[in-house]
Structures are given as C-alpha cells and as structure tokens.
Length: 100
Image (cartoon, rainbow, N blue to C red):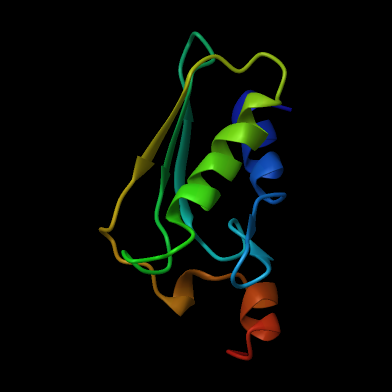
C-alpha cells in the first residue's frame, strides 16, 4: 500500500467530535500529497469557517498521520475554497445525518 493510501486510510479514524463521523466520510479531505522524502501535505477544510472544533480536528489529523511509519514532515493546509457542503459527504455519512 502506498504511503498516500496509508494516510487516507488513517484519516478514516479521525472523527469530527460534533458530528461523530470521520473526516473522510464527511468529505473534509480535498487532497493528500506525498513527496519523494515521504513528507505529507494534506489539503482539507471544515464544515464551516467558524467551526469550534478547528484546532481539535487539525491536531487529530496531525497526530494520526504522525503515527504512520515512514512519514516525514506533515503540512496541513486548511482551505475554505471550495466551500464544503453536504454533497461532499459519502452516502454513509449522508444516511447517518439524515441527508439520504
């Protein structure tokens, strides 16, 4: 399994504490890049710019990715464009939150 895939799989374990759903199913991860030195860049967003769980979720991402063997530096780029909306969620998340 590539390091990029390992990072993606690990992020399913990071739960949004307000919604109780992992950030991958919520569609908060826009991009995962791994360079030649195994440094990881994650482009992500949150459900709202004023999300009170901002620091908690970002710290959870960094903590979980740092547990993967071989990962170098971790850079998290928190973006607001494109804006998150419920259509970015997996069908499983939509069902749990009553959107399906």
